[in-house]
Amino acid sequence: MAVGGWGKAGSSLRSDSAAIGDTGAVESERSGAMAAGVRFTAADEEKSRGVRRMKAIATGFLAVATLVFGLSTWAKAAGWGSWTGYVAAAAEAGMVGALADWFAVTALFRRPFGLPIPHTAIIPTKKDAFGRSLGSFVGENFLAAPVVRERLAGLGVGRRLGEWLAAPGSAERVTTEAAAALRGVLAVLRDEDVQAVISEAITRRAAATQVAAPLGRMLGRVVADGGHHGVVDLVTVRVHDWLTEHHEDVVAKVAIKSPGWTPKFIDQQVGERVYKELLRFATAIRDDPQHPARGAIDTFLADFAVELQSDPATQQRVERAKAELLARPEVQELIASSWGAVRSLVLTAAADEQSELRRRIRHGVRSFGLRLATDRRLQRKTDGWLQDAAAYVVDTYRAEITSLISDTVASWDAEDASRKIEANVGRDLQFIRINGTVVGALAGLLIHTVATALGG
Image 1 (cartoon, rainbow, N blue to C red):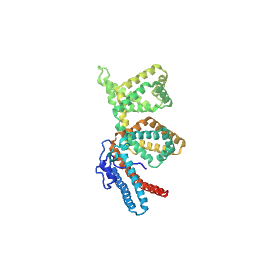
Image 2: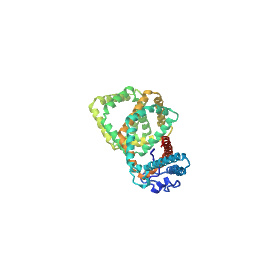
Image 3: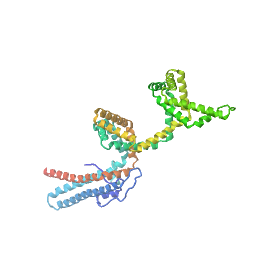
Image 4: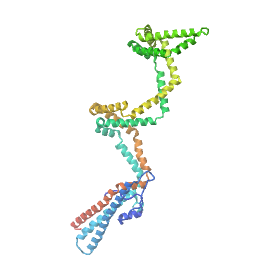
């Protein structure tokens, strides 16, 4: 005898009786949102109507078997012939099979006729145990590291991922999604928190790093290569231009510094003389690459580079200057405010499809996809990383995942959960009743035939 389930959880004795005798009876209640988290949707309601139709058909089989049994029994008593015994036996066995399977199916979801028969209403009473068993089953058979590794190894995720990334349009899609994710992350982050982290990290790193010797080596290479000449040229040009633009200011500054007892026209003449000498000097340095002042600058920078690398006193002065510079509020504010500039640049670049950032991401994704699609060694590495990551997740969080299943099932209302399950599987379970009627009738016919043949 097949075992299954049918009917609505929580229905009354009247609905059980209707499932046997009254093929037209239907349950009138409809469900909205269920209190314990199980929702009975419109699709579930449609499935429930299908269950009710199948109940009527299965009950119809029982009714036909009952009618045939009654008629054949009457015909046998009336002497219509031996064939009536075969029909009556088949009908009787069909009735027994139908009733037995009705009981079995009904016992899954409720107590038949409302009677406290042991081992009935299995789903409502054993719901929590089912949830725990389901969680354990999933954990042992789906969330086991060997199972996950074997499954991922057979999928060839690395190769498939590479082929997809290399396909036209995939890099663009990945870039679009990455840009959206980046914008979302930047929108969620609090600027003051990020600024504090950046400021603290930069300050701590800079304070722990000795800068004198590296600066000396860098300065030495720059001077040896003549890389500072461009800076010197720029400075001399700027000094010359500034003197040209601020003629009167320079003269006035010099005149102010003159003794108070000198006549003003003398002060003016002195100022003009000093200005002309300064301008001549700046012009000479600007125009003459071999000017002695340039050589003096070269010598000073070369000596300073050596001192930075070898002179402890110079190194200590540089480190003290670095510490004082880092401690200044202006520097801390500049470090903290750098996040705002970076954030603005990243947001702008992420929103612009033609930005260098997105172009580089697209190119990088496409190149990586092409390599991953063809490089077996890289595919094996990628598959290994994925398998390790998946194994770590299932090993670490298996209990949390399985408890999610068991706790969710435990939170459901028993009758509501039973009703929803019946709506989804009850229609198929009604075929158990139909099969029980048909198989029972055939078995009864066979038994009666064998018994008759043996002289029963």
